[in-house]
Length: 216
Image 1: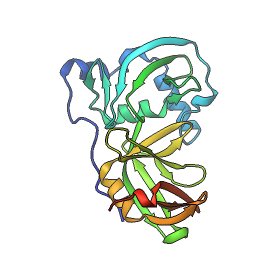
Image 2 (image 1 turned 180 degrees about the vertical axis):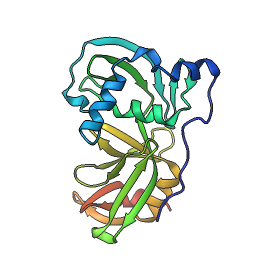
Image 3 (image 1 turned 90 degrees about the vertical axis):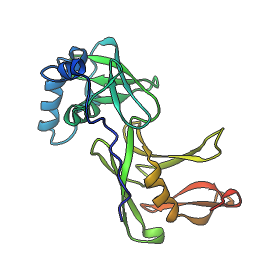
């Protein structure tokens, strides 16, 4: 079972932004190539948690709630470049988001979560169920004790906003199509002395809403 995926990156961009995005990284991130090479040597993601470069200021880059990356107000249309940026993204203890390379650290703005879960794979049933989410930048994360899901209730809508942890304080907002599939898998369980509607994955029950508040 896989949810309908939605492509969140823009398909095109203004020539000025395209020119900046090709050849050299936006904002002059000279350490990006070194970070990419470090990731290749590690056979995974660049080890951004090990790097402590000097803070170089904020970059006019933003990740919108739908997962689109913007530079100077224009969507970045090159998927490979967005993926590369995502691998050097770090969410520090100060609550801010940074792009970190071996030689520089720049701040960027994130409207909500930095990633969006656009697809879900379901294996097993009931308490043995395992959910694997794929993000808009190609990361895969298996929901469980090390990668929990959380559901925040919107003050205005009263509806839950679902998230899943991807890595190192970086979460993905679960998009609407995937969330609808997720709700179909929901069950009621006793949780902390109360009846809850929620989801099982990786041997962990993730409560969404008190059972008496659920209207399906």
